[in-house]
Length: 95
Image (cartoon, rainbow, N blue to C red):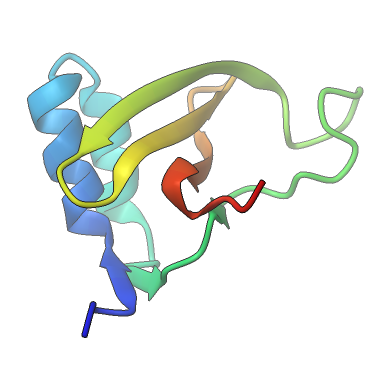
């Protein structure tokens, strides 16, 4: 049976391997209170209410795309202030 949880350390390891210059993201994830979560298509780390509007916490800047051996493509949503806004697991999205 496949483990129903995903560990934050797996994403840290992927960043170290695939985006080694992004130590800022590694530090954020290490400081996160969330250490593991039930597998789901999207993990929101910042409120997405009124995205990209004035006063909204969610001000999108870029995506960082990582490839995991068993989980497939993982996309980190990076906000203008450098925080990770969310983590998307493309393989789990039902189209």
